[in-house]
Structures are given as C-alpha cells and as structure tokens.
Image (cartoon, rainbow, N blue to C red; front, side, top):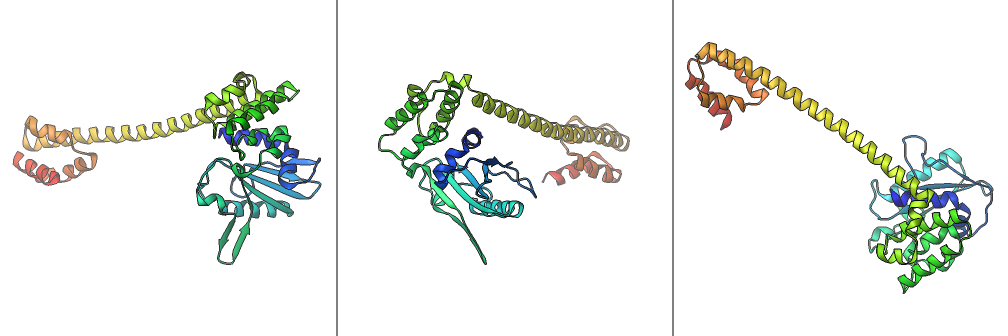
Length: 300
C-alpha cells in the first residue's frame, strides 16, 4: 500500500514528467481520472487522461509480478473498461519496480483463443537513470534504475533532491525517494544521504500514514465483527448444549435413578448433536449398562 500511495502521489502531482518520459511528448491540459472503473469495482494504480491528445495513459506499478487475477488478464480487463467508457486511444504501461528473475516480468500480452492484447512493460532496473534525474517527479524512480554503483546513484539522486528550491516540494520528493529506495537499499544507507526528518514534516508521508492507520482500524473493526460473530455462534451453541445436557440428565435420572460420577463426566463431554441423539433413545434404556453401551458405541 505504501508504494501504491507514493507512486499515485507522484503521477498525480507530476503527470507531465511521466508523460514526457514514457510517451516522449509534451502535454499541458491533463485530466487525472478516478481510478475506480465502472461495472464491478476495480482499481488501476494510475489512470491519466491526456485530453489534448484524446488519449489515456494507464500506468500499472508492480513491486512483484505475482497477481490475482494474473496481470495480463487484468490489463485486458482495464483496457476493455476504459475503452467502453472513453472510446479513445489507450496506452498501457506496466512498470516493474523490484529486480527479479521471474519470467512474468517479460510477459507483455494476454493471449487466449481468438483474443490477443498487448501492452508495454518497463523493468525499471534496466532503465538508464539519466532521464529520470531530469524531473522532480521521476527522481524517486531513479533510485531503482540501472547502475554499476548503486550507492553513487543514490547519492546523485539525493543531490538532485537537495537542489529543489521549494521546501514543501523538496520534502515530498525526499519522502517518496526514501520510500521507493527502500525496495533496494538498506535503511541505514538511505539515511546517510536523505534527511529522515522530512518524513515527519512531509504532507505526503502524513497522508500515507493516515491511510495506513485507517486501513488498520478498518481491518481491526472487520476482524472484531468477525470474531464477535464467531464468538456469538460459539456461545449460542454452548448454551444450547448445556440446556440439552440438563434435560438429558433429568430424563436419565427419572429413567435409571442416580447416575454415577464416571458416567456423568462422560455425558458432560458430549456434543449438542450427540446429546440430542441420546435424548431420542434413552427411553429404551433399562439400566446404566445400556447407557454405558451407548456411550461406548459413539466413542468407538
């Protein structure tokens, strides 16, 4: 969730940077579309509408290639929904963030009988860092780019971040850089080059933190409700079992007289269903031996 929010922030705050880098074109009149598509609720990581070019740029960021449903099917699903809703050209790009040898990061199409759908795939660790170092909105991604000296690249990104004049922008880009750099760098190394204090001071970090807290609270509420329902069901079953046990003990006492303590202990362990079955047959018992035989039968 942290990476999704970070990248969503970057794309929405700096759409021109991403368009220039990914489409090699300039656009000034850009509308950010809502990410929930019609029909069943489904969210794309970032959907950007280039109104001047009558084109949608759909960016899908993935830290790992694993996906349910599989990513190629998701991309086809997104394309169909977007095309139905906007009826314009759609450019889809999947950007994999974390280095992996999985073959899934090389898949760039969905194929089935009579159906084929293609999209672009970018493995960020294969990209040259220089284009990413040119724009503030792309600096966090630069930490994940191709390099023979990761530490030098991180230092170079940190220098570029420090050169941003507007303080609030610098703080936000610093936070996003630290969060994304965490995919490949140890925290101690990141702290050598980027100010940890920016985390506490930055609005984007506070927003991500609040979303995380809200999600945690919601999960806690849902879990609490679920546990409450389960506990209520369990308590109801146990109350029913105890009522049935009292009834069975009463009937057995009237039928057989006093029941010895050993048999009483065995009766205490019976389930509700077993007690109900016992209640149906106990009128046929003539002695404690019959009750003991019945208990031996269900326990064997």
